[in-house]
Image 1 (cartoon, one colour):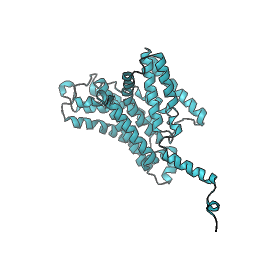
Image 2: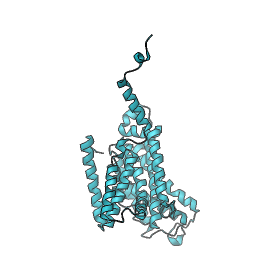
Image 3: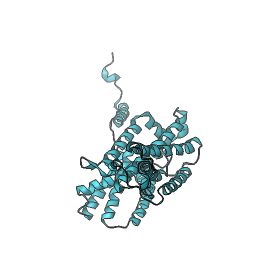
Length: 344
């Protein structure tokens, strides 16, 4: 009869299994927190450069100002992980809330004059975003057109439609419910921050633990291999674009709530900041790699950086240049540390 010691597997055979179980148990991986030291460093620099940087009101303002950007980064991150990109998100963030306003406000306030109930106008916003995402999906996934060109063209089309609808006017005479996300607080924190955190939590859980989320990573890594494994790549890719469009619509509602109106330029130029946050957060432009926690940290980093530069009275024109430099630096670092060339 053999003893238990003789039948037990060697310790070196157990180590990989234990490591695998540990990775499944731990909700956060170390590489997901790679940007955390940079966030802490910026907090220290901000505290030294400006005594008011770490004031509670200023930190809450940073979170509130970053919430709309966070929703757009979340949308773009999911699309990038699936192996595609969407340049039209910034225009969706402008057009979708404008449509919600137009169907509710009276004709005297530049509305359509339909004066539909408030809840209908609010529902129109994410549905309009989802509808635009569905059109993008039909062109990219269904017809196989180049995603970069399609969403670039869609971005231009949507911006033109928004300018035509508002005709240079500003939409503001809407019910108070349209401004809740951007102007109200709950437990001392803007409602938009809670909504953004909830969206990140749900999406992060889904991408890691749900089969649809795992399919998104698989498609981004290798669409032919995912297709061979039985994954309906077209359906999943289309669903991600639709979800991204809906999130962009909600982001636009947050912006409208903070500003108190919707104008023709709402969301214009935001896509550059969105890509900056996603790239420095570790989202691969080639698909299949990256985490939403990294994207969230990238959003917070850019939000703190913009606030710090604003407190230092740096021109907004230079802020855009700094964002572009950050993207280039992130690409170089990714190339040197992982050997990955972030080509699209």
